[in-house]
Length: 516
Image 1: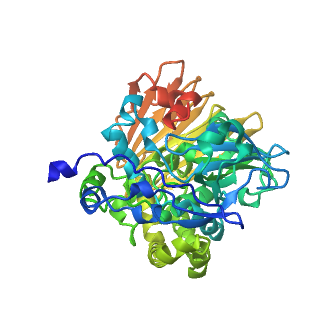
Image 2: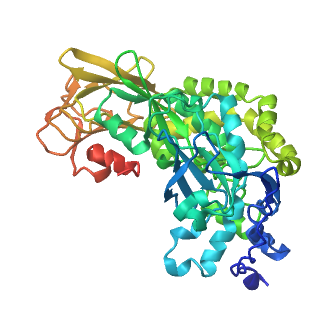
Image 3: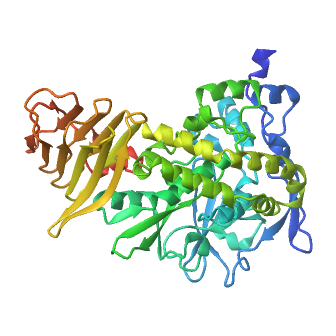
């Protein structure tokens, strides 16, 4: 029985008859009746959200000519390995997108496997996604004070205005929303920003100059919101960034999360999927409680970004942001969000989601504390491709303070600083990246903290003050690439090294963030 039950699911059921468009231009249609499975299959491969995928819902019919004043023109097919997208543009050049409700992860497989047992099993597991989950995130994000897209659930029929895309995109459910890119001064939910940028553009700027920076507390608020939703798929390309000019002439970026397909993920309710979850601990299911032991797996996809963008926030910052977010996500806000669902979904899901969202909200301070502890263990502090000075010095209570200054002809300007406690941090790595940088190591640092200095490109100055004339207890290692640095480090440990691709320069830092 076990072997028979572990086989890939049967071929998808034949397509049902096209839904009838009513006089008020609505249809009743199910997002994915093909995910219905028998009891044996569900026992091994999970019940997931199969019932919701098979539930007919009442949805408005989308008309490209009337969706917005002046109509829309389809211009380009796109999307990830799972979601099918159609990019649209209005007569003013503003871009929108239709994102398919149904997904197809088999596109990530070699072509020969897509229609085989493995491909059919992967397609079956689309049922782990709540088909209408992304639809309620916008009002929840609004209550949280975060930027967001504004998806509308629509049915695309056989619309002649689709042109060459008519066959590929007709007769299916989609989320219709603004595309967060370019000039968005007219969109309040993007902060009315004059320029919304991609992650690649933003990270390129962050390592080019300290005149670009991310609003770290706002990003942290977004990340805690992700955890509240159980959205574990938050890698770099799942974000856009609203840019704003600061009073000092610098540019501040604030996060715009996008693509909420994995919010409210339900994976561990089958015998085999539960076992897979032990290995793939990032596949976190949306339960009433967020287990603190699961916080690391829940955030694995976003870990490179988190380590870079949250490195200078303190434990108190985490506590304050978590408390503020918890207070903003009131019972009334949750109720308003759940009310936007189609009435058929609202009737079967509201009680369950009200209970889960309320319980998870109360855990946010504890989750934030655990998140802080995980990030505080091993710290990475990059500079930029401009000239900078890192100052590392002990404090009176045995902690270590790191300050980062921008160097210019006008002098040194403090950019960032944080004090690290050896009770929660075991290592700090400083990366000079480009420019002629200076690293100043003052006094005898707490030996419980391992500190690594990586010179990067340029001719750097690395000095200890005072220069130790005998072996010191401090666990400081200077990693010198041998490209003409000036070293005044006495008896500190010196290690000649060949810089790895992901740490040497700006392109390498992008590589670390999967953006190059």
